[in-house]
Length: 222
Image 1 (cartoon, one colour):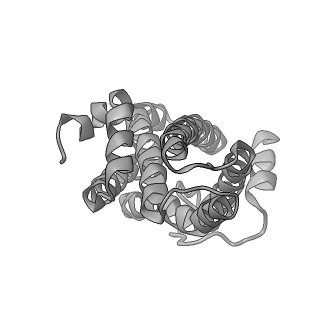
Image 2 (cartoon, one colour; image 1 turned 180 degrees about the vertical axis):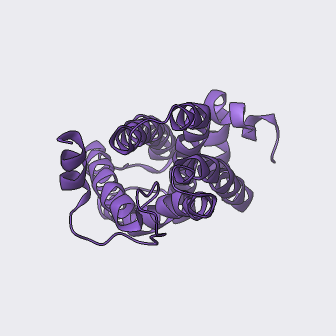
Image 3 (cartoon, helix red, strand yellow; image 1 turned 45 degrees about the horizontal axis):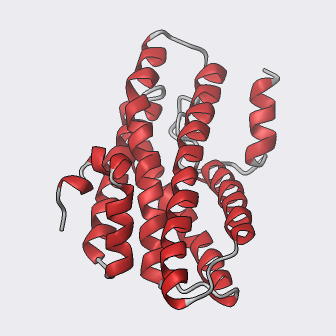
């Protein structure tokens, strides 16, 4: 099953074939394949984030980035799937999970592609505020790209299943869920912070003095 269409390039270029595989059968191999990609590529970018502080922080951040994606997904997927069922969706849970993991894999691959940029600004001795804002922008770009795949692939799979079985997930439910995913993901990133760390002593978790949005505003104000 894990052919060229499941390569890193294939995740971008072979959407129709992968969607057809999701429709035809519940392929657990795809779940494991996307999970491995998320862990490897997410860890790659996380490592570059933590290097600002220390090598130890780099390894911790390499664990935190994939964890951020998985925990956010676990929190949000029941809302999308079961609200979809309530409104007439025919997607099975494993189909919903596969599509969402696919989108997260896209996000993680794009993050890994930004890793050299992250290292460049790190080696340029950029300020902490600049580094943090750069990471926020990079995550936003890659996150929106992943959500684009959620929208496109859910609509494709739902339209095929709808034509065969009738009824499908309402588009507004998907839109609301995407907003929910972004908000939960942002706050989860703050809870799991620091990913970079500007203190000499190693920090494992956020002190909780702000939320994500007030913290970014504080960074922008210097």
